[in-house]
Image (cartoon, rainbow, N blue to C red; front, side):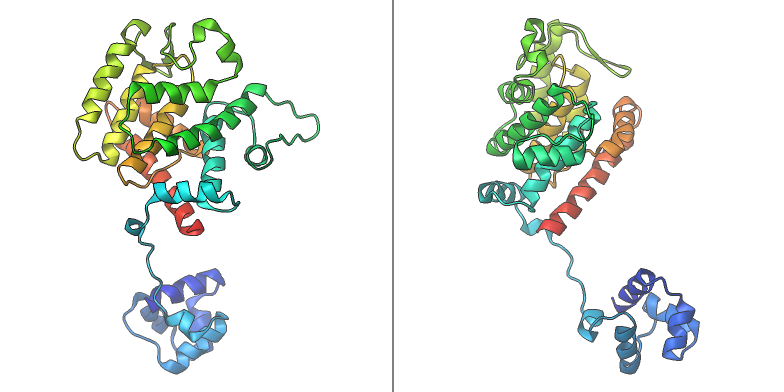
Length: 307
């Protein structure tokens, strides 16, 4: 609508309704009515408005087309862009954003610029006397491989083998992988915890994972809320010694792609909301759902920008 565009341009240029009114030679109340869509400016006023905002009349009058997400197959787009091997597309920035945020949530000290540098050059950028944990570097590089594997099998039914492979790719070569008891790519051997959530004992992990997957794979029409529910139950089981959050978040991304739902990346800046959502999910599901919906909105902006 012209009124909405008029308000956006006016705010962009930090102008008041009174200032616009003086330029057009009308009352300030008239500008308010323009912006509310109650009345339309005449052609002379439109010409003056275009001049004020340094745009063409066509730009001022043309309705912005809403981005139609239903016409885009995100999975196919990511796969196609991966093969192109070009910078500055959705796949490229998904890799960097996903690796940086999901690892940072778990304590990685790598910056987003360093993450980008590793992805683009396969080298690490150090500044001054910066000390970087080798595992942070390995897990970042591993996450790039993990995303590619996830894209390859995104349409497959979720299974224990897939989930175990996710974990193996993520932790391969790290110091944890050198500890026999850690069991990379296999379920935990020692009890663990996540916040105040009691997790499944090692002896019961297999049983609880089978039950979880049976429930999930029997759903006929998977919705975003079902994927979030799976995530909460998965994190309560906490089947691996470490890396459960990252494996759980890439499962959510995969299942969104499989079910034609806009995927999302939980951002590091929102980790407190994410943790709160997990902690209070039993009594109030809305916190975690809202956090995921907000993350989905952020990814939609990435899609709009790069597509």
